[in-house]
Image 1 (cartoon, rainbow, N blue to C red):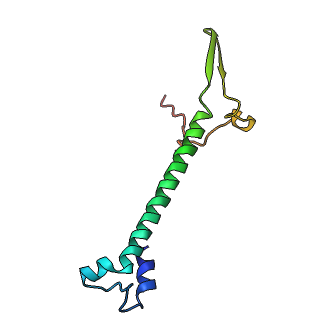
Image 2: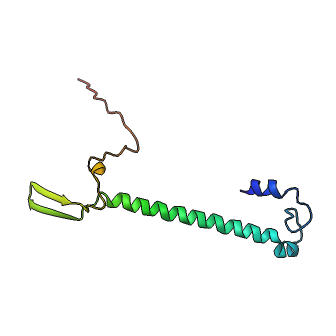
Image 3: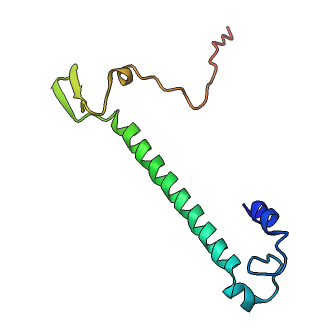
Length: 110
């Protein structure tokens, strides 16, 4: 982002958007400071929106696999009841890819 702003405002020279301004007072009242503050707020808002969306997606992902209730009739018979709105048929046989794969080999030293 810094490079984009430098390249686009490099040729401005003297004026409100002078990136080579050395006077702090002129910079404080200039339009360049207001523009950079606006860009900063836009980047913060974008990150906040992306984080909220990611957290909501993760929450729905986790809730798909949490039962609404569990019925235990005997020690060998347990039934999980899922929320119909959250779990679909395609999710019923869900097998996630492992984060890492480890090849297991049998090794006999007899």
